[in-house]
Length: 177
Image 1 (cartoon, rainbow, N blue to C red):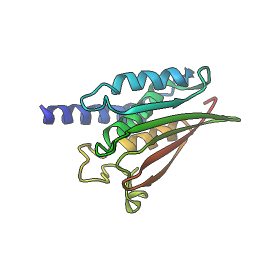
Image 2 (cartoon, helix red, strand yellow):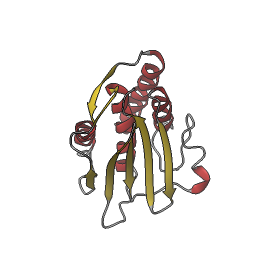
Image 3 (cartoon, one colour):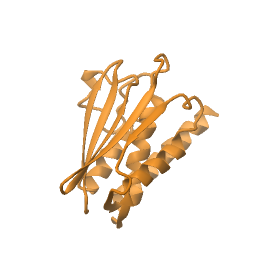
């Protein structure tokens, strides 16, 4: 069952990568709060994740014009990772998602107090097939797809992380693609 699930996830990642590389961009208004809430609803109730507290600091009506499908792929990967790499040993497991309109751009921070990523991996985690942890059951494509997709959307991503303390991914996207 686990192998089938892993293969299914890998095939989905390959499809996401292929779509990002081949399909034209479809610009449409996206209300960020709704997109993030839909992603959380899709991911939150997987086995073992019910104990994670999700804190949202998002203006309810803030929207950007971007490719909704690509934006969804980014959110699913990053929020999914925040859930997946939570630290079950910690009493309070938390994911905080904050959105900050900043002039012509929007900054989105997805932070967790999970396992964190050791400093020696920070430069490599956005490379294709790179896995920073032996615990990772993924293909090493997720963060690569995030970075490539953000590039198509004229966005950027940064990581701040410490092993055992958690990770913060900071995205910047134009308000109008």
